[in-house]
Length: 164
Image 1 (tube, rainbow, N blue to C red):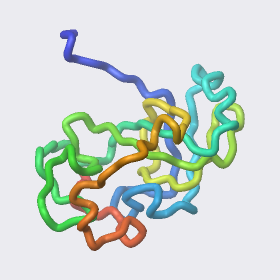
Image 2: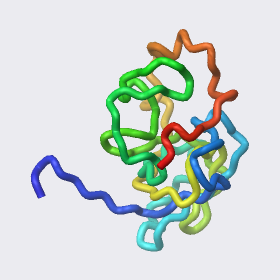
Image 3: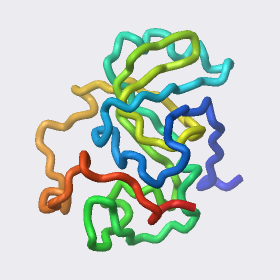
């Protein structure tokens, strides 16, 4: 394996009510009430110790249901103009890694029940990190092309454009 090659193994799976990307929320904020369960493999159960003290966590996962093509320009869900893939949250990416910030409902054994889930059922989980506003929310930000977008996350759902 060269120094530029990495191999990741799933540490669990994310269970959701969404059978495909078509029609699911495009970001956790798009459906904050939707519940999901993060099921860790038994070998990683001890890793959720003390996570229940946080209100939110960051889920990192593999976009297993996205189209394998990874164009460098995509038409994002919140716009009708092609944008550079790295200026979007589109699931088609050179490395199909997703990120969601979700609310922690409960932590039990090796399961984390969350609210605001926005991924397809059986999504392979790569990592969980606690959300810490002091670390994760810069005080002075700009949202680029999204600032001018007339769309809102709450009114958008995923469609077939990134489905395999």
